Image (cartoon, rainbow, N blue to C red):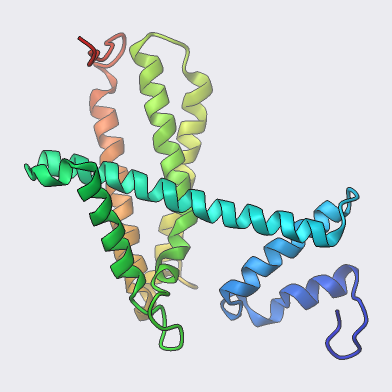
Length: 232
């Protein structure tokens, strides 16, 4: 709706009113981004005959479900990581699933309490690292493909169908992360307010390269070697 005349906008005018490219990406707050996604999805559903009000409700539930499942998955994966670390550094209490989950939630909660800006206040810390979400999500997909490839290689199964997407999903997110860090226009290393992104982004890249090196080291001796079963 045009705020001046109150008339319904259509086509390019509606798009420019919602997204207003002159503001720049930094001018959009979280509610603007989520609202644009919900109303955009609802308009797609309207094109196939679903009423706009129902479409908004469906997409809003989709967004809420995505947030909940992402939180659940992230907490579970972090618990696995902490349990593995506890096993490797000989801290038995961290191997307990409840203790590991508590540590994961506590660390995330403490980081969330860091204000993303002076105006945002405590509880907005997640927005500091939000720009890393897309890259880390895709890198995780690449590592999942790597596990599948090694599983197939150990069993002498065809693996080209998984190897090609593995290479793509490992290369492109790394390239994107390096571009975000070092491009001359908006690179994080050139912005003193984004040092958390530089630190965490660099750590993620180091872990990624570590996993790649580990994979290369065992590639030659993994073919046909099936892992031992834990069932006696």
